[in-house]
Structures are given as structure tokens and as C-alpha cells.
Image (cartoon, rainbow, N blue to C red; front, side, top):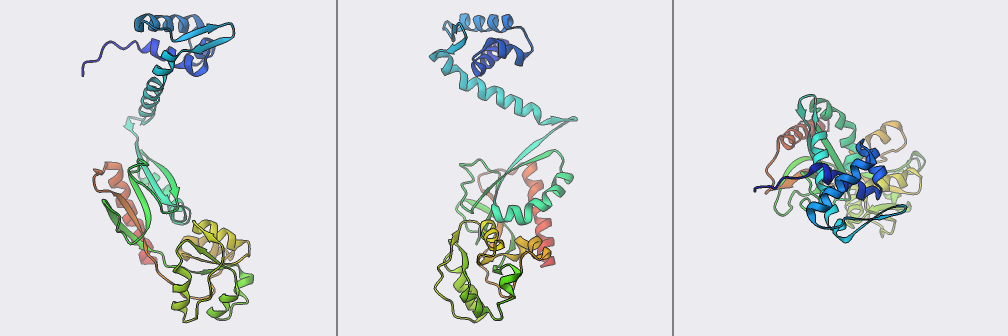
Length: 294
């Protein structure tokens, strides 16, 4: 594509003035005079043959033509600024966009992420959390860490490790639980998966009661509720090892039910970048260590 000469100074002056609706504040941002900004905007208006601002006694009012031009310029300058910020010390910083189940992010990934950053200082991880419902393409993710069976349409899935569920509660509740059947008398905190508590009672060899406790879309919220002493959570002990180690939580019985594993997933159509390959290798190493410690 052959581009016409782009009047970058004039475009930058207009974009800043449009954001501030002031030549004066735009001049301060650009470290030039107010007259220089006004002059550049006039040059742009002459080139385009339109009026971009209406000059008012106290500021500016952008015209419809100006409003039509502004979004493209703002996005373009933002993208250029973002790209320039990636260069540091002779290296270009790569960006890795990652979505993760909130429980996994808090309980496993975040305590280890500093190790990845130390090994790969020029990869910036941008992390968002979810409740296991994620659209990799729509959200523009390189990877999504999910919980399930690994079968997602058009997705490449790398198994990390299983995270079986067990009953977790505060010590005061654990003290009155002598057998798994005693949990039937407690408030059972649960996820939206209706088969988890029945599966746990089956594994414990105890009859399951009617499950009527509060429903949570995140194990983090469920366990936070359990920490208030209001019930027994069914959650993966692996993800709450710090609470168990500190004594804030107890696992009253060594009974587990497995409903899936954690997986590192990406779209099959997504060609892995060097940053993605580095992250996948590191995740495989860290997951292997977790399985070994198991």
C-alpha cells in the first residue's frame, strides 16, 4: 500500500486537543506552545478541507468531522506507544495474554509467576481470571487455563495436573466431625456442579443428604465463606495449601472426589509465538514438579 505523506505533527496536535478539548492543555502534554498546537490543527483542517473544532470562548467543541477522525487516530497512537514501550535495553518485550480459572490463578499460578518472570524478563504476562467459562478467540488470549476433561472444540490442550476435591472447613467445625457422615449436619457450600458433593459422600461410603447449601461460581469465594465458619467447602486442597499450612483451614477426612484436571489450552489455529512456547515449557516443568510432590 502506497501511503500519502502523513502530517504526523498535525495529527498528534489534533488528537491531543480533541482529548482535552483545549489547545492549552494539549500544548502542555506535547511540550509546545498553545500557538503551535493551534497552527498545526489549522494546517490539518486546510489539508482535509473540513472544520475539526469550533472555537469557543472557554475551550473547544469538536465537530462531527473531528469525531469521525478521532477514534482511528487515538487507537493508532496508543498502539504505537504500546509497541515503543516494549523495547527495553536493546530487547523487545513480548506480551503473553493469559486467562485462568480464578482458583488456579490465586492458589497455584501467582505464587510461582515470579519464577517465570525471572527466567524470561522480557515477556510481560497479562493475566485475566474467569470462572472456567472463557472464549479464547473473543478475548484475544494466547492461552487459557481451564478445568475439565481437556475436550474443547478447536482447542489444543496440554494436561497440567488433577485437582481432586475434598471437604475443607475451619478447625472449630472440624473438631465436631468424627466421621464423614457427620458432615451431613453442616451447611454444605457447593459449586454449580451438582454432582460434586454426592460424589464425595459416595467416595466416603456415606449416604448423601439433600444438598441445599449456597452455590458459588468460584472456589475462592466458597473457601472464603468457609473461612468465616459458615459451612464446609468442597474444594481442591492443592489450591488452598497456604490456608491448610497456616491452620486456618483443615481437611477433616482424607476423602477425595475427582471431577477433572487443569489444562493449558490454546486455539489450534493460533501459531505459537516464542513467548507462548516459553510459557508452555515452563508450565510443563512446574506442573511436573507439582505432580511429583503429589
